[in-house]
Length: 109
Length: 116
Image (cartoon, rainbow over all chains, first blue to last red; front, side, top):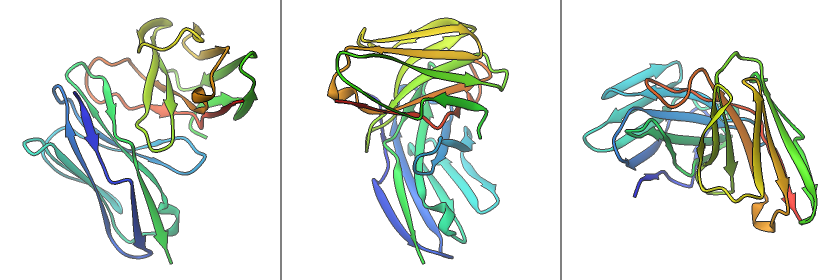
């Protein structure tokens, strides 16, 4: 079967750095997405990785290793507004999205 | 505001009621989706429409009935639901369906459904 694993919840301190991991086992691979979802709001697109390596976008970076079936989202200089759930999703060989259950990130002052 | 608007934002209904959820997108996208989001579970894809044609129905019970009158509007008709159907129902759109490249979804804020 197809599976995406990510931690259920993480806690970090304002101003610090946090890394949210995502491992996947899917039927084929056509890219990995990260979405951010604040409580009561719509998930919003953060990043897309299809090739190995690190993609940096401001305070957020996303890394992919296809050989290891592994990605992480790195958040630097954490702000209180970064408190949200972070969803990892993989496009399989049929371009269908397989979703993880999300990681709830709690930022403390 | 994402460009995808869902109404109502909250809905409470009894098991014998009939109600509908509405989704509208102002992004000029050609594909629209219904997802179910339950606490601590992955998003569950329910239905996909490409250019108004239904292309996926992921074994969803018939008590959920989708309707896509045009590429900007999507409805989810609900009837004789069960308490386990209580969840957040998310609508999304994308420029194209699941075909190639990065299919980035734009989501609405969801309709929170409670079935008593």
